[in-house]
Image 1 (cartoon, one colour):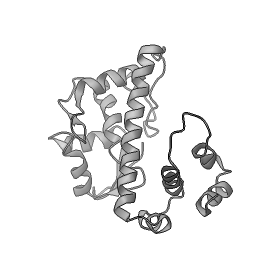
Image 2: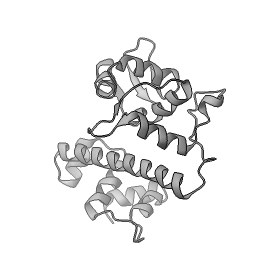
Image 3: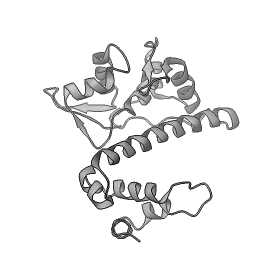
Length: 199
């Protein structure tokens, strides 16, 4: 057991470590991938993780990006599978906690999510491209779930930084920015200089 794994076992009752070290045949993580995920779970900065694992910071950042992309594909695949083989019509997406009085606009099934994401996004590029804004708030909110996944939870963004993330997705990136804030996916300071993902 590495020092990082011992730390997680002590701090988190071993839950994360147990999951990563599972002997299930479905756990296809390599030893290196397990070490990286264990390190990411510690919350340490990329530079420190790179030093601990004897890797370059750019390699650590690339691996984090790769994990995130795999997770996005897996999430979409699961939604597609459930839409075909399971009755997921009553399996609903969680609602942003800042929406204190949710209405029918936020009653979105996983099936609807998978259908709309495939209909309105072009996935031929590294960053998904929104081909058009749908008519109707419910459809828009559904797509915001996917757009928000391009932002990291553990990072604050300046105006220029969040624009650089949203610009490849849709030409009117300022509109996306406003919708993400208005519908509870992103928070920002009153002066509009700092943004962070909250859902």
